[in-house]
Amino acid sequence: MILASSLALTLAAGGTTAWALDRFVIEKVEIANVSEYEAEQAAASTTTDTDTTDTTDTTAGSATGTASDAGADTVSDTVAAELTDTSYVSVDSSIEISTVVTGSGDETVTYYVADVELTDATTLRSAFAQDSFGENITETTSEIAAAKDAIFAINGDYYGFRDTGIVIRNGVVYRDDGARQGLAFYADGTVKVYDETTTTAEELLADGVWNTLSFGPSLLDGGEIAAGIEDVEVDTNVGNHSIQGEQPRTAIGVIDENHLVFVAVDGRSDGYSDGVTMTELASIMQGLGATTAYNIDGGGSSTMYFDGELVNNPLGKGEERGTSDILYIGQ
Image (cartoon, rainbow, N blue to C red; front, side):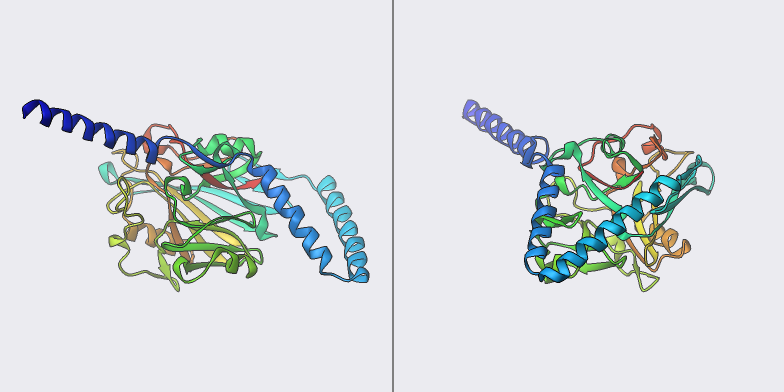
């Protein structure tokens, strides 16, 4: 009986280990070359649009597009971007990085703010680790950003940790399984918190959504701190039930159309930065002038990148944890 019980325990442990490896470690690649895939989707969309437009309009549109492209090239060639240690200004975007330190001793909190204004909402793009879509595929924020020649980046929602949520990136649908509060970035510069379970990815795409994030919770409701945010559970699976307590965090805030603010709060490092609660994070976003704000993946994933370097100091160790995706602005 003792031998039988020991064998049963061993097999059970082995089964649990195998499950955990499959769920959290083993890469499951669904799309191996995202850049190529997005290009194909864009080409297919362009072909469809052309097929549904009459010849006169198509010709005029093409001529206009050519002139616009030429004009854009001329501007890009003659107006050089301005770059300093903490700022970047180009024809597409304006980025200002600042550091905020509050409290003292073990209550010290250090966070980093990127105030971003865009001339075109689609300048803010998404990228996946290893240029692949699927589960458990990771790289550091810096690695993903460098591969995209990004001037600025933050970690994303770590979509690859889970198999639920609506995932639309750069105007392409990757996943359609609504499960929680999401954040939708529209091509016209609008940004909205929405309930994933009441819509579909195709409906969002038809309404002009460019990118979505699936994490949460929403931090501000009409500029006021949202109720109940300390009790939110993002996932119900092993390893990420809750996001309570003082933690490193990343958040996105909306100040106005095409005017965003990104915050990375460091934590778990006494004397440098203790981290913040969800309510404290909401208060930070409110103080920065955001009317809408949304929490995304935090902990060791909380990362801000600017001009080839890490801005923050993850966990006070300066070491990035791998993540599945980023939001970035290219140079």
